[in-house]
Amino acid sequence: MGTMHHFRLVSIPRITKNEEVVESALRTFYIPDDSLDYELQDNGQQALHSNDILNRNGTPDEKAIFKENVPEAWLLRAKPQDTEVLKVYAGWLKVGVAYISISISKNSTVDSVIKEVLTQLGRQDEDPSSFSLVEVYMGSKQVQRQGLTGQELLLYKLQEIRKISLRQMNQTRFYIVESRKQVVQVNLLLEGLPVQLSKEEYTNLLQEHLAIKSHLVTITHVYGSQGAVVVQITCFSEAERIYMLAKDTSVSNQQLTSLVIPEIMHNKLPKGGSPLLVFVNPKSGGLKGQELLYGFRKLLNPHQVFDMTNGGPLPGLHTFREVPRFRVLVCGGDGTVGWVLGVLEAIRHKLVCPEPPIGIVPLGTGNDLARILRWGAGYSGEDPHHILVSVDEAEEVQMDRWTILLDAQEVTEDGKENGFLEPPKIVQMNNYFGLGIDAELSLDFHHAREEEPGKFNSRFHNKGVYLKAGLQKLSHTRNLHKDLKLQVDKQEVELPSIEGLIFLNIPSWGSGADLWGSEGDSRYGKPRIDDGMLEVVGVTGVVHMGQVQGGMRSGIRLAQGNYVRITVTKPIPVQVDGEPWIQAPGNIIISAAGPKVTAFSYYNGANSYNFTVTKAVFSLNCKLHYRVTVLTVLFYRCF
Image (cartoon, rainbow, N blue to C red; front, side):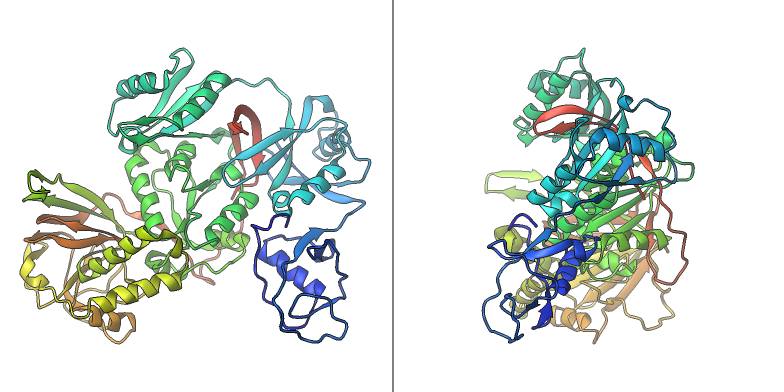
């Protein structure tokens, strides 16, 4: 693939043909090309023929004798070709045409390809010199654009890219765009500012810390709850200066971040279209998150696929703020989903589509929300294109969301001299809220992950850490029923002797366990994710939790209702959707949070919708190699 850092393990029989290994490698790297166009090379750059037999140690073996040696690394290379088919994407909106396929040879130049593309698009009467061919590389952190000269040989260009990396070739597209004078207009999202300030206060901060020039820079959008603003800049050099300076600037001990934001030409979207906004957490699921980021940026418009480690959900939601209708796909664990939903809740009043339906590709450890929405227990390497088809086939369902107010009533101590009253804390809950032993185990896991984050890259390891923490709590007892009082719908609930109290919004807990249980009970209704009710369950300890995980028992059903009040008399571990902390004594109130969430529930074989492609037009001012430059109106395939 051109770099030893991007390797993949391919499972093959002990004795197999070279061509079968090539086919497996192409599938592993999501390259949908003909295997006959590729070959394997050893470290000495010697190519293997398709009928060569590989044995276990990776060497050609005419006798096909298995040898127990350490396998070597092989390079996947493209075979040199005299002709190739080049896909050229249109840089303007033309419904029904994603790209034009052009056959190129050693003599094909950029100018000749432009003429052929215009002919196939029915624009042969227009002046070819008014158009240009642009190479766009869709990397993980940025999109790089390079204009090609008229006499440049395209076949040689493709071969040079493949020599660098097949991955780079797979993430490169060519666009034909109209050459027109561009209006300088760069939009930068600045995050890390103090929250809940006015536009004037943010302007003063930027003038103080970034020395912005008021005649060139204007704040166009304020996201006070996120501590972020969008500035529009009409000078490239000023945009570059602010972009770079922000990365080295702190305000109130908070590091600023800057990100170039594209603009969707929403007025040119097809009527009824519903583009897909994709969020990927590349740190979830080991390398799988990173692979999905690459895969979706190849299949979709790269500017509609956002890396959650580069600014969080706000850049994507801001980019889609004026789209009349769109869908969201979140690739990550329950924490990533909660992050997206939290920011969406905070800024929905600024969106033309305030309630976009949300689908999930589960990459985390628990993935309880993904399980009940039928997206599975975890991503196992499916082709990204198949995921997009699944999104298109999914049906929309409603899901409750809850607000938790935690109001500490007692003065806590910070050392022996400095006492203070904790301010009220408000959090949103999607899955469940736990107090006691359940939250204590989550807290132990959280501390272990903070100490050695590099070890927490697999679900098996994560579950092993949970198991170890649970074993350490076997002799531990917590009389939770003595430390708190519970009211559900203003009715006192008498608690039995329990160590954990859990409030369920979804019927999946602790990586797929059914804590409420499936047995019928005339006292309670059947739990649903859209019934406006919480299920209240108790557990007696670690052993009980293990039995629930193993499907041997269910929890102790205590109540069902839509308004909960808890009075806590001692500091206690709590967790919301897997995020734990120690809560000071005081009151905790749980109530419904605004409108329900619209989510995608996937059921193979259920209502199937036509697999359609919606195309989007983006206008982008983009940073390239630490330079801020303009990217002309681009047109990508967009679901």
